[in-house]
Image (cartoon, rainbow over all chains, first blue to last red; front, side, top):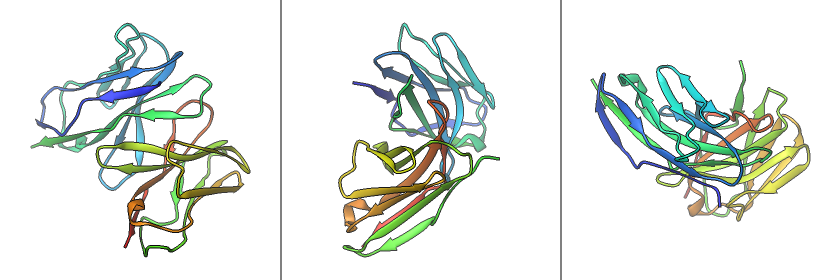
Length: 112
Length: 111
């Protein structure tokens, strides 16, 4: 079946550290891939997306590359800030499908 | 600016009560979704709707029902609330297979 697996948290980093949150997926067909972010007390919002293999999504200094050969979509940021503290969800939607499959979420804490 | 609103941010109900959670979107989206979010489990789909009066069960529909009488409004109903339905409920809307837009969530406590 279709699924998304992301690294367990929490992840704790100091400000200006490099961030990687791993995400791998299993899907039939060719999914679109997403990273959503949830700040404390809020709903999820789109961080970035990629719709085909080798596409790179980027936003607010975050990047992720759609790797079909390794079925991965790892999230990276070169220098995190305290304001990046949030829960990050990796997700996929199959082309023509209604459902979006979410990973379990990874909580990030950034210390000043 | 796109917007999805939910009727309550926090709700406290007693076991056995009928609970209504409402969601409204202003983007004319066809697809609307109800999820529950629990620690360590991520988001789980309860129901979704792809058109007015159309609904499909998600992964955990037991104990819930939904109503979509107008395109912009999607309601989640707990027919008889139980303590295991204490959770965060998130509504979302989407046009086609692309980005979902989420409301701020309703944190429901069932006593």
